[in-house]
Every structure is written in C-alpha cells, then in structure tokens.
Length: 396
Image 1 (tube, rainbow, N blue to C red):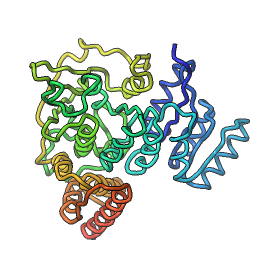
Image 2 (cartoon, rainbow, N blue to C red; image 1 turned 135 degrees about the vertical axis):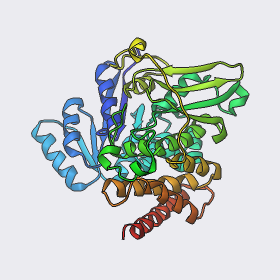
Image 3 (tube, rainbow, N blue to C red; image 1 turned 90 degrees about the vertical axis):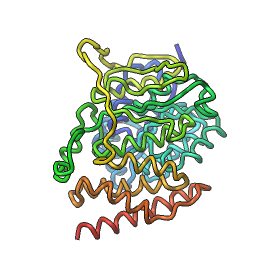
Image 4 (cartoon, rainbow, N blue to C red; image 1 turned 180 degrees about the vertical axis):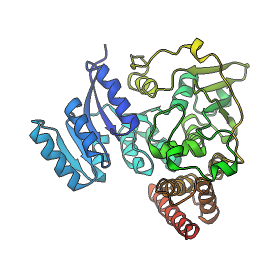
C-alpha cells in the first residue's frame, strides 16, 4: 500500500472538485486533504471543510473568508482560512503537497496550475485553459521542475491510457498515426440555424450525458469545448492539429482512441463519470476503486460515430485555426469565448452569436509570440476588451 499523500483541490466546489473529494473519501488510508479552494461558493466549501477537514481553505473575497472563519470556529474546526488570488497559488505550491487537482474553470485557473507545475507536483490537469493559453510555458515548467502532468479531461485521460508511456518527440516517431478525439455532439446535435437562434441558457446547460458546470456545458453545446480540447491535446501529446481527428460519438462510452501505423486502434471505454479519470490520475500507475458503476455493453447495445458539423458549430474550426496560427491566438480565442459565453448566460447575447464574437476578436486582435506569462495575460485582457465591445455593439 502506498504511503499517505497530501492533496490540494483547486476549485473544490465545482463538479470536478466534488468528484475528486468523492474518490478521496473512498481511500482515507491513501489521501489526506491539505487545502480546498473556491471562488465564492462559501456554503459548499463550508460543508466540504466539515466533511474532509483540510488544513487550509481558500476563498477569493475577504468578506467570504471572514464568514467561513466564523462558521468553522463555531463548529470547532481549526482549518485555517486564507483569501485572495495569491492564496490559491500558495496552497498549490506548498512544500508538503504531493498532488494538486487543478479544477478551477477558465483563465482564473492558469496561475495556480502553473504554480503547481513549477513546484514539481503531480498535477492532475482538469483546467484545459492553462494549456490553451500558455501551452509552451506550461510544458516548459513541467519539464524544468520534474512535475508529473496527468490529464483529467476524460478524452485526454483516455488518450494517455492508450498511448505508449514515452510518446513525446513526435507521434510518428512512436508508430502513432492519429489521435481520435471523441465528442458527444452536445444537446443540439443535428439542429439547424433557425432552431439554434432560439436556444436558451437552460437548454444549453442540459448536457445529454455529462453533469458539468454552466460554462463548460455551453462550450460543449457550441463545440468550443472540443476545440479547446484539441488545443490541449496538441500540447499534452506533442501533436499537430492535423494529427487530431474529432469524432462525434453520441453515447460518450468511448472516451477517445489512438490509431497506430500498423492499423491498430486502441480505445478506452467506460461510463460517462469523471471519477474514473480522477481515480486514474490520483493513483497512477496503480488503479483504485473510483466508485463508478461498471460499463454494461449489453445495455449500451450500439456505438455510433459521425463527423462534427463545423458549419453550424464554427467554434471547433476557430479553435483549430487558432492552434495553427500559434502564438497568443489560442489565448485570444479562449478569452473572447469566456466573455461571449458569460454574456449568453446572462441572456444578453444569442447562442449563435458566441462563435461570431470569437471570430471577430480573432480577426481584429494582434497575434504575438508567447515569450512570457505577461504576454499571455496582456493578450487575454485585450481580447476580453474587444469581445465586450463587440457584444455591446451587437446588443444595442
């Protein structure tokens, strides 16, 4: 049995964070929670602290932090409470921490995930934006620090399981023909432009297979999530966009595949439950119980595949083009998308306008080289400003 390890969960109140704590709770002899962090879901974080008893809890605002301190003290718990953005970085890089689950959604997750990588941790990466925004810098930090980077997105985790242990240096050098990135197609697969024009936030957040947060659910509905995953896969597996084929697979049973030069195609299958890749990341190279129901192939009965509809869902194409352009283009794409999705969720922008806003910002913004973190953050800020301007003009 492995010795006990300390875990920091960044974004513990989201769907990935809560699933991570579910798996950890199954193995108290292996894992202890060092820190839990949240943006502003203080009630959920309080409940998690009472159950998992971390040494440190982090919230962004001082007001929320004061409230949590009072509640924890009243419950007789001595968990230390920190506040502010920098506190997330601190608990991600603390010397006693062995494993960091990087599950903060969006660009906000970049800096703490990078801090964990720079500190040589085992980084369970569920925040794809860290690689989308600063792939070269992030992978350099992993290499220099000796960190272990394990992908937690179900698709990338599946590819990782199907690839040879040593796969960097070019896929072709290891007999790999192609990475097959599966997609459910989202809730609007097969819909035409007239129907898409009237999509509501509630409809977009109702994913047919997965239970996810609102932002990632909208990204899944526009296929932007698959575009971001394509960019992430390029960095994780040293691949080009041309070596990645997106395959719509509505059942979400095959999580991704790897095609080899000899004609073999290796696939990883399982029920659509994020606890499977989380458990794999926590225990790798061992396997532990994830609390997931076994896959019943007789119940699944059939597996379907089709090409993605990039005409009515252009975000996938935009992401591929951004990766091909390189430099700060992926960071610009991500920033514009985050602003547009938020505007849609607030019902100030139509669903089909999300892709229009992203395309407009990519056309207008200046794409530069990624030579520093400051360059990435500057590109992110500028793209957000442009996106907001376009949204304001469109919604007048």
